[in-house]
Structures are given as structure tokens and as C-alpha cells.
Length: 617
Image (tube, rainbow, N blue to C red; front, side, top):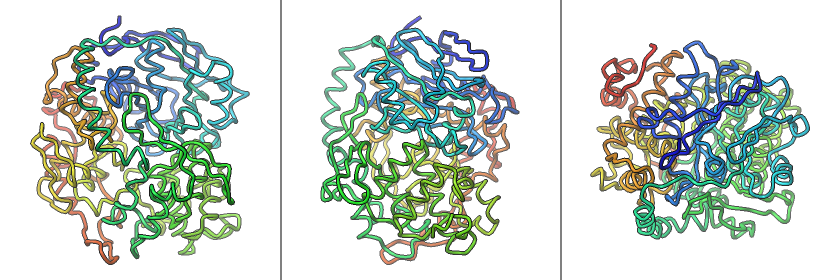
């Protein structure tokens, strides 16, 4: 069955038994969870039990598109991956753009559920309603650039590839799932690539010719025609500079990381050397990259043609990478960061996690906790681009201290020294990305309560408290250091992000006015549904709470909704920064009340009943 916005089918793959079933979409779940993150989480909940661990064959990797994917809806080229995370031990998810999701939809499927464990490496091939498993021993040790070339030659230029790199195969728990070859679209967070490696599946290749039906094509066309020039116009700097346009602004307000989040000084010159204009000054910017359905073009393509890091070519470093492998390690050599970005992609490891772990290791090296004996003689010093690059290689190749770091913060602290705990900047085992919660109180609450661990796009609360106006919600910016109302704001923005992650709309477009109102209109044009903004927010709230239930089954409660000590006790003391320490407990009380959770952070029975969420707790 196919209905508007959906293909009506999932692929369910049992890698142990090498069987593939085509399963009809659960339309009741699609009504309540829409698609993407929400629908994938509902399938995950059905596939696992409270005792399932991330390394169990029963733990699935779920790829899920959204109902707008493959349509003219603005920023429709996104899909979602969900699994239990081996890095954190709890719910894991990652969002990614590019062209792969649209191609899966064209091939006739809304999503894929991978379960079991193959006896030998395999890949899954999908084309126009057909799917098969094939041997992958010959490509098992290849990196994503090389895998892309192999499949483009075999399947043709229109094939789209999602695959793991060599880091996952060597045991890195910070491994993601890489997409689109040198264009470098990464589902980087939560270590889902390491789950694929455990299952011995190297890649998923898709190719198709179909399109999802749209209920109101003229209405959608008119909506997109009206909003596209507004979104593109407001975000024209992002098309020119990519997300690197934000580097200097973040440094200016004290939001970007420096020297493992210690902020001993301002870093204006360093930020300028890593900023969007620097790509042009260095002559390494080639062109903007657009995901499918995008009018923004926030990706950048780079080519370093001279110097010690020449030959770097492909998708360039994003804001997060520039700050985590750059500023957080005090490295302001743009070409070196470009190479580090390419290395991470070829290894298939998360640049956020890699940069955070390297800064942690550099501070531990300064303190004498990590020594030359651990690093193979490499002095892991802040500000040294060669040390940073060798650190990336050690992590990706699981060499020396890298074999400890690439298992994530919790493992690293347990193996290195408990004294290093204060240097480990993470929430629930997931590294804090390049937005400081001391710069935004609402973001602090959102980080602490995010279901996957700290991640800025789980709530994007900082965007709403700092600059974004949403007329359809009567929302205006509240000020970064306001406390009252920030717990409620964090809950609201997390619900909104779950709407966008379920429909599969890019969050950058919100800055261009593509907010919950027009997103709802577009969703209704595609599907023919008559959901209101309130209905959509209810769906988002339901998805967020279901993820919390999965985590509560794994022991998560208020004790885990915390921030690192450094974020709650170490004020930013550099000249020009406003000292602020987030009053987390006050905001959590308001947040839990808004959510309908107990004071210990457990969803109340009446909340789950209102949201129609089954509970095993």
C-alpha cells in the first residue's frame, strides 16, 4: 500500500539468517510518530526489550526517511538512523542529509531495519523494490571514498551509498555511518557505525526511479515558491561560507570551545583563521554543497592544492569540526583541520567526539596523566597541528592511546585515571558539541535532558533563546542568561526538533523562517492530513517521551541529567565574556513539571497514557 508522502513499505533484514522481508508500514504508528526519528524510535522500542544491550544481535540499526523526503518540500533530503548506542549504552540517534534518503524512497521503501549478525561481511543492495545481501569481504577494509568509487562503477553514477569506515572495523565506538562519498555527509553521533561493524554489514546501496505521491502538489508548490527565496535570502552567507560563517560569532559571545572548554583567553585571531572568509583567503573553497531539496547550500567543498596538507579534496569541515578539532585543541591551521576532517571521514569517526577526546587527552598530557609511553612518543600538546593530526590517526587506527580514546569518554576515564574525570566534557557519555552551555541557560537544560546525550540539535534551545522569532507560537527571544522559563523552553524546543526530525526537515531552515508553521503546512500538503501545529507538537512530544522511556528502562533518571563539573563551576574569565554558570537544578524542576515527569525525571503514568505510549517500566 502506498499513500501520500509514504511508500508504505519497510525492509526488514535478518543478517544472521540472511533473510529479507518486505513489511507493510504500521500506519497507526505513522499517524502518531509521522516518520524519521519518531517512527524509527517506535520500531526500535518494539524490536528491543529492557535487557537488550547495544552489542546484542537483536539491537537493530534502523534507517528511516520522513514523509516529505523525495518531494519538493524545502530541505527534504534528510533521513534518520536509530539504534541503542554502544558509546553511551542508551538510546542513540543521528540525523544526516545528502541524497541517500531520497534515493531509498525512490527505490520504494520508507525505511530499513537491520537485525542479527552476518557470519561474514556483507552489503545490502536495494533497487526499485528489490533487495539482496552480497559478500563484502573485498571492500571491508576500504574507506568511504573508496567504497563510493567501487559501487559507482558497479551500480552506476545514480547509486547512493551509506557505509562504515575502517575506524568501526578496528573497534572505535565513536564510529558513524558515512554517506555520499567525498561529499561527506555523516550520521556521526552515538556510534551507530560500530553497531553496523558488529553486525558485519559494510554498506547499504540504494538506487530507484519512483517518487512518493503528494496529496496537494499545487499547494506544496505554492508554499515552496513563497518561502524558498526568503529562506535562501536570509541564509545567503551560509551558502557562501558554509556553517564556518558561525565560527567568529560563536567565539565573540563565548559559545565556542577553547582548550578543552577552559577559556583562559580570547581567541579572536584564531577564530578568524578558521572562519568562512578564511576559506576564500586561502583559496581552498571550491563550491557550496546542497543536500537534496535544499535552497541553502550550507556544505562546502574544498581543495588544498599546496603546502604540507595538499591533496585534501572533498567535503570541507563544518562549524562543529572547525571548533572541536580547531579551537578546542587550540589549532588555528585551517588546512590542517581540513585534513583532520578528511581523515575522520575516511576512518568513519565522529569529528565532534574525536575533537573532544583529543582536547581531553591534551589536557591529561599536560597534567602528566597521559605520557609519551601512551602516545608512542607524540607530545599531545595544545596548539600543535601535527600532534592533533597524529591524534586523529591514532584514534582512527586504534593505535597507542587512540585505542582507549576511540571507545569514548567513559571508557577512557576508567582506563586512564580517575583524576582525568574532570577533563572529560560529556553528558551521558556523549561529548558536548561546540556550543557552550554556559553561554545559554536553556541550552544547558537541553543538553542535560537530551535523550542521546549532549547534542545541540536535540533542542536547538540556544537558537530560540538568543535570536529566533516564531510568530505562530508567539515566541520571541528570551535572553541567554534568563533563568525563568528556560526549563519550559527546553521542553518546547525539544518537541519541535522531534517534529523536524520526524518529518525530516533541516533545522538550519528555521533561521530562514521555515519554522513549525510552514513545516506543518508543507507536511499537510504532502500527506493530505489535517494536523494543526498543536497536533504536530504533540507528535514531537510523544517521540521525545518514548525515547526517554527507552532510557528509563536502562536506568536513566535525574542523576544522569547533569552537566560536567567544569560547566557548572568554572566561569569563563576571559576579557569580554559574561561570567555565567547555569542554575541547572532550578531549570530541571521547571522542565520536569512541564514534561509531566516525576521529580526524579521519570514520565508519569498519566503522561504516558495521554501520549498513548506503551510502558514496560
